[in-house]
Length: 165
Image 1: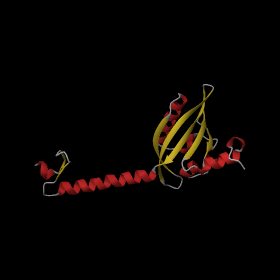
Image 2: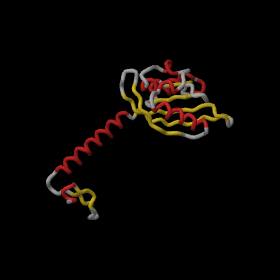
Image 3: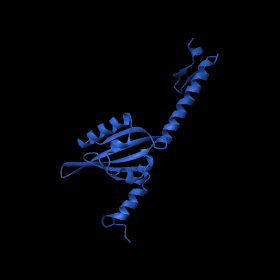
Image 4: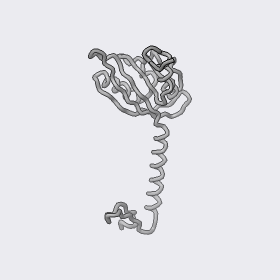
């Protein structure tokens, strides 16, 4: 067997399903024509559940307008990048970064392709960092002693309340 995907739709499908990011191809009307397994997993379903439906059917809340405005931008030839937050059918929070590119054939917009990356773990790390910084800031500001940080150039970069008094 050769690895020529032009003559082997099964090989192409296997390759697209092995990608660790989600992949969607939508027609000019926003109807999903291809969804790989990873994207379907992010939404808590299967590719068969999604193909043939509008991409907007699988998002809720503010994500609907974000998705639709980015689909309109792609129809105008613009590449888009944005984040959306979703809750899966199982009630899990999922944060996704979407990179979408329009597809033009002979100058006519025929649809778009989107790569969707699950950034949920990154969001959790960012939140933990913010909480840690807030605890540090509270502890430093609650100290009855003057605390300050000076960089290597001698510039003061942080003062607690006591040091400002």
